[in-house]
Length: 361
Image (cartoon, helix red, strand yellow):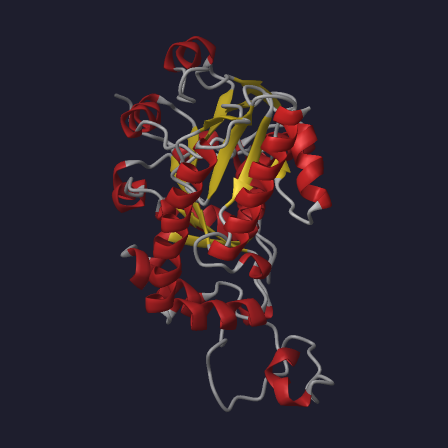
């Protein structure tokens, strides 16, 4: 096997890039200094009790990365933080894909931003549908499609919107054989019994793992995505990212949240318990054709008739779910997020009542 050469995958204009060096790259944590280097407002902000917000944040989020490093048992040098995982997906395209030449491979039904971001960058998207029977990777088709212009493969596990884990061995085999970049999106990994592949990141120099504080940690409003990859890949991400991509307020709140692990695990346990409750309850309702197995914090649920009809009924009851019926292999399917027990009970009650109504009709 040829030795993996990261530089051979990087766009020439990125290889030649002289990065922007922000004023806060150095001397960020020093106390009692007079900072006259970043054209900040030295008199403070109108929020005088939050005076520190007149200063730019740490551009490399060192303290927050230390907290994440401790939580995940991964060196901070293997961690990049983005303004949501969407920023990281955008960076992957910017670093590795040549517009009009290279292509990326996705496995629908899956997270839509892999395709949207690729199209924004002028990169062709090749779709290989998951297997119809159990929403797994089609390795035979992948092997036939991959060529010298295949630069990025996006894999989501647990997958969105189907909720299932993809076979770990399949992901490992793709990563070992593929000569480009594999992006494994583990946004929902904390809800799964399957272990994160991040603990083996040193074995895969072409692998980028995406995680987030938006789902299991309940910090979606902060917009903090996590990339775990080789030191070399992380360095390239740091080289081309926007200077201050994570606000000071987001960093501070995330640090406080990560210090409260007991509450995190308490909520995580409740979500998984409620997921099981919803699975069993929904299966007993006549209009529900199938509730797909889930390792996420949502359930893909197939309806016996038009999912749009049930969706509109729930809207009238002030319940918002996601109609996924227009997505390939998700005909007449609703994606339902696990709520609190009271929310889940109300949802199930409304679906039961609608099921009775449909039978009368």
